[in-house]
Length: 221
Image 1: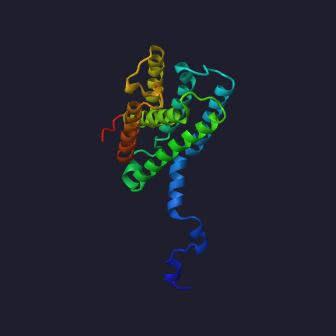
Image 2: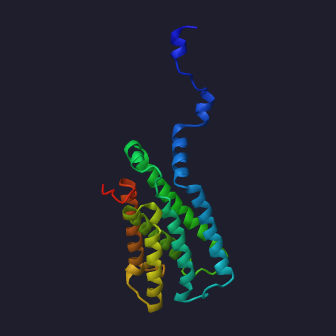
Image 3: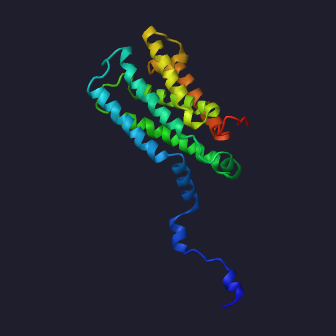
């Protein structure tokens, strides 16, 4: 055996490299570090909770007050997504992860779509006021608020804004407000409400993709 053979690094088997591409492993590590598997279970629980609320009539069957309980669950699902923005590695990850913006973008979009799907399945066969249109719009808008909040508070406290705005919209619902800015209480056909919710989501998604959530209180970058 020569010195060159000793210094030469071992070569991984071709089959093993083919079975575990680096890109897939990186994406999986990113999702695990953000507790996305636990978030998926939480979203499934939100769907089951919505099904129970509609099936056992925990709220009104029709009228604007029928939006109260579903709105709470929709905001809860968005809060779950917002918390997954938290990075346990902080600035080290920002400095070394060139794929990080793409991973943040795909994770946020994927979880938002999964939340809508989970709640839609939970509402299947039940009388959901406003239908899937209101449900999807509310999840999109609340998630956007959570992503925006993570820029200021960090991911662990990003749930505060969507839940706080949900509480405000409960008051707006009782008062019968019709402004597009109170989009969670508006009917599915309200174009202004859709514009507001989508604008909030697009802004939050763009900023989180580019900058990422705040990693510490002194992070002003």
